[in-house]
Structure formats: structure tokens, C-alpha cells
Image 1 (spheres, rainbow, N blue to C red):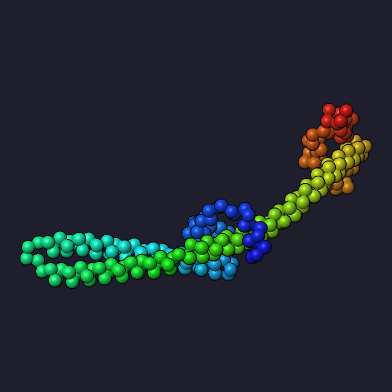
Image 2 (tube, one colour; image 1 turned 30 degrees about the vertical axis):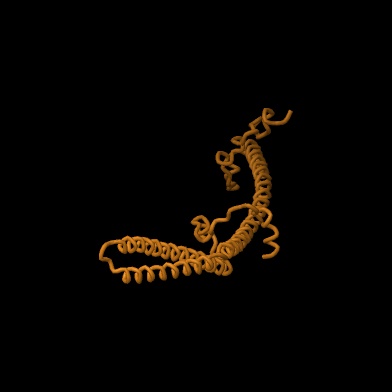
Length: 229
């Protein structure tokens, strides 16, 4: 991991890394390949930290709403204290109780803020480690695929060359068969050839259909129009 951090740290300076476990595109990567045990562990750790941060923030919001409510009630109690016939002692007791609750709210807010203070750094570190592990996992897949692609490409190139050679050889054999058949047909006649049960269909294996060939004096030869001059 240390070497990976050195490799990527310079490239990632100033870059905003998203929370990967909350990123749908990151999740879709693993349709192509399952998550490794290490990725699963980092994912669970990151989710736990993010959930902890979100829970603390919600708690702070709830406490601040309560504090705001208590402050508003104190204002109303003080207004009531100025009214004729008001029980000052009772109102002061309620104000003191509200003041105590507001103090507790401030303490709890401070506790929650202290709790989440180091979370962004922890989240970034785990998210960074998860990114490195993800990149290494899929880099290996791409590297292995590329190796296989290159091997297949090399095989296809060799086969293509061999296929071309075999097609030329096949055409040469077809020309030879056609010419031999033509000579024998002209010399001995079809009746003699039939006696030997020669299995050859000149129409089906007619090489004249191949570009660059033509019939001359009853045999197949190269067409000058297709040869290099």
C-alpha cells in the first residue's frame, strides 16, 4: 500500500475524491468483478465513519433546534414576568430551568462537535485507501485483459497470414486440377475419364472465378491485367 500511496499521492494533490461507497458508478464497477475481501473491509469501515458523521450532525441539528425553542420560551417568560399579577418566583424558576437546559445543550453540541472534528480526516484516509485498492484491483484486470488481447491479436495475425497462404495454395491446386482434367478430357475423351470414376466437378471447382485468372487454350493461366507490370 505504501508504494501505491507514493505512486498516486502527487497525482491526487488538490483532487476532490468522492465518498466511493455512496457513488453509484463505483458500485457498478463490481458488476464486472466481485469485491475483494480488502475492499469489503474498507467499504464497511468507510460506511461506519460516514454514518457516524451523519448521525452526529443530525444530533447537533436536533440539539440546536431544542436550544432555539428554549431561548424563545425564555423570551416569553420574561415578557410574562412584566405583566400585572404574574408569579415572579415561578417564572424565575422556569427561566433558571431553561437556562440550565440551554447550558446542557451547549455542552452536548460541543461534545458532538469534538466527536466529528477528526472524522473528515479519517473518512478521507479510508476513502483514499479504498480508491487505491479499487484502482489496483481493476488495473490488474485491465493488465491481464491487455496481455490476453495482445496474445489473441498475435494469433489472429499469424492465422491471417497462414489463411492467405492456404487460400493461394488451394487456388493453385484448383488450377492444377482443372488443367489436368482439361488435358485428360481433350486427350482421352469423357468416356475414358468416366471409366476411372474421377470425382471432379469442373463447374464447382472452376478457378476462372478467381480474380486474376483466365482460360487460354483450354487451360487456366494468370490474367495479365492483374499481374504487376
